[in-house]
Length: 208
Image (cartoon, rainbow, N blue to C red; front, side, top):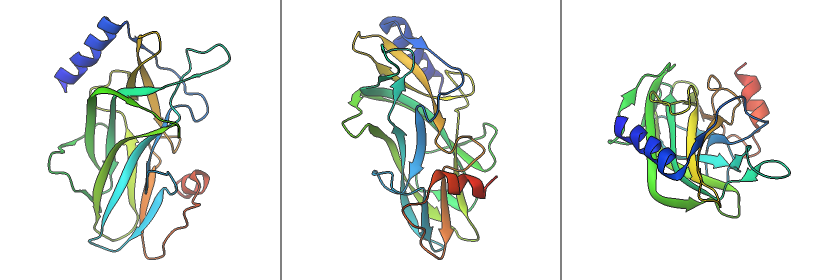
C-alpha cells in the first residue's frame, strides 16, 4: 500500500498533479457494481453455491475543475483505488485479495492499482475498472458496498488518476453510485430473477 501511495505522490510531483476533494456534483464520477459491462442491472439472482461475475465501472468521468462551460470529460484513466465491502454470504473468488477493515460492515477487500499506461475511457463514456467473481452462499440478500481505501490519497474518498490534454496529472475523487458508502451498490437475491430495469432509486429506497 505504501509503495503505491508513493507512486501517486511521484505522479503528482512529476506531472504537476492536482488533488481535489469536496462535495460531489449530482452523479459526478459515480462508480458502481453491475451485472454486465453495459451497466444494465445492479441486482442478480443466484442459488447457494452459484458463482457470479460482477463489474466495477466508473461512469462518465469528469473533471469539474476544467472546461469553459462546465465539467471536462476525462479521456483516460491511469490508476484507481476502492474497497469492496461484502456481506458474509458473498465470497470473493480471488486468491490474491487480502481482507482489510476500513470501517466495514462486512468483509472488505482493498484495491489500489495503476495500469502502467493510460487506458482510454472510450466513446461509451464509462470504463470497467475491474471485474470480480463472487460465490453466493445463500440465506438472504448478498450486498456489495463501495468504500474508500485504508490508505486514502483523498481523505475519506475513493479516487482515480488521469492526465489531461495539457499533460497535467489529476487525482480526483469518485463516489458510490448508490449515493452513500452505507448503501449497497449491488445486491444478490435468491429466487426470482430481478428485472434489468432495476433502478438505483428502487434499490436505495429498499435499504433506507
